[in-house]
Image 1 (cartoon, helix red, strand yellow):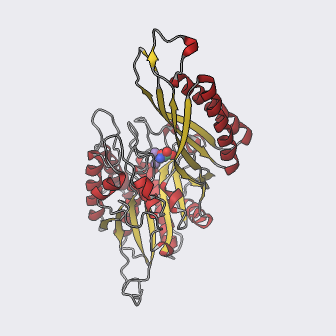
Image 2: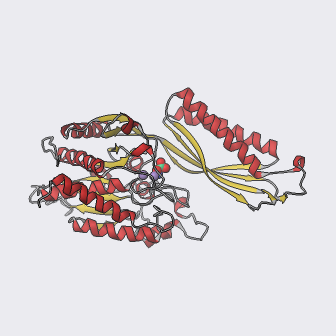
Image 3: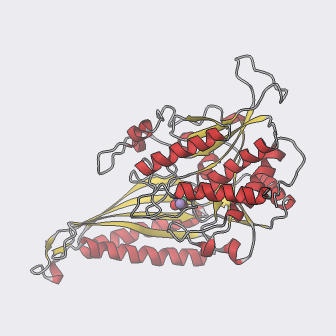
Length: 438
Ligand code: HGY
Ligand code: MN
Ligand code: MN
């Protein structure tokens, strides 16, 4: 029985989503941390899927998995340049397949699967493009034990410093060695991709990870900007002591000092978000207590601050007040508080021309859109440092993400893939056209 292309497409998407979801720590679905055995297995599967779609696969120096649909110079009527390298442009479409611990099945993954759907459409319709199309799984988009997210896209943008690459985790694994182990070589980690001037566009599809599209029943979000993301390590050092014998007025309790800081940060961020009436958040989501014994006054706390801001003004206001918060808590609790920057990514406005392309591509496929700012960080923020870049959102159920309940439909992914496909065809100079496969 012949099925409609749309049903065949959503079935193919569903199969890919389910297969990738199977690469998880068994007792903590869905967990596929970068460089883990689950990640390696998923990468191998993805490389096979890329190859099956006719893509030529390689791992670049930053550990990104790239499947290239190379332009056919003759059929595209292009010439070889003098140095024997086809002087042709490139378009990148990608996202990430690594997850947070106990994360979801769609964060990043939907974007890689949608990118592959673009290739399937081009193959099924024997369409030649006048540029190389690179389908990318960007390495390590999620925050990792080395304290830096977006490893692969930062590498492409020349933002992975030797200091970051030299970091070692608690098990002694050095980041540079892990990148080498999976096929990278870290060369050019602090230089922008050498062919950046040939990149026409970097595109990404991602679940919204918030509720707007679902509440307002829009198919596609056209992202205007990705917020600045700033992460700091906070060390609080007091004095461990016997919980039974240390008087309450003679303690240097690092956890109480940390609690002061956590509550004050929450109040400050809430005030800034309300007063500035724009996206501003600050979170302490990771904390370790030492020695962490029920009968011991905590002597030390290590925690990580994740701050996101849609404006430099809000960021500066927060950091000034944050310094005072730490100093006051240290004095009140007789502890030492040290703060060190871990990672920074400034606000990334999206390319207005590509935003328009994507809006037109959604409209021609009969899909409704809304422009919105992203609350989450994405690889596209770093790609925008060296090439025109844009990202579209698809709805996700109840805005849930970074948890197993994360959900979007195969149909929503297919619709997003139609938008990417129509946009790529427009970039290739073809008339704006629907690729709807109802
Ligand atoms: O943290 C983020 O915003 C993204 O999910 N890595
Ligand atoms: Mn993501
Ligand atoms: Mn994420």
